[in-house]
Amino acid sequence: MTSFKYFICVSVIMFFTTLTLLGCGSQGTTTTFGWTPIDSMPDSITSPEKLTSELDELLLTKDEKRIKLLQEKERKKKERIVSLLRKRWRKQRV
Image (cartoon, rainbow, N blue to C red; front, side, top):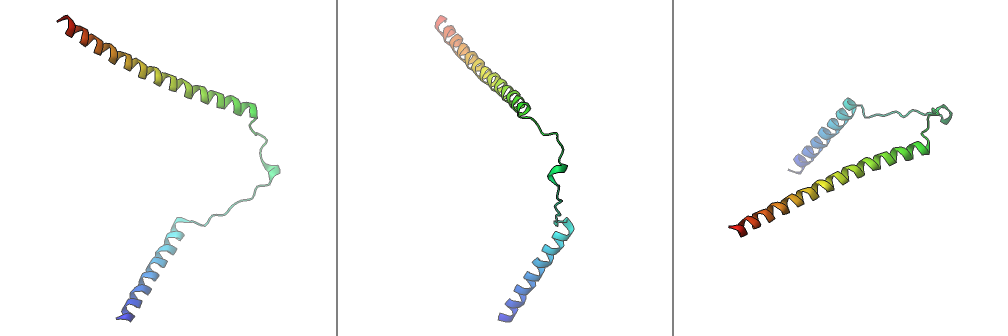
């Protein structure tokens, strides 16, 4: 019985090893990294001023969206309050 357990263990190990090797080979997981000398890098490095202006624009658009969202929430709150007040007023009149 013990030899049968060893046979099953060895078979399972071989099975998973084969699957792993076949999977890695078919997906091409071997990656080669190229070396680029620093002098060959393009000189189109973004200036800090440009980055700052882009960040400012991004923050402004986010702020505008946030302000619009808050205004919409406040408008809905006011509409709800007004509708509740109208209902109360109608009940009092009757």
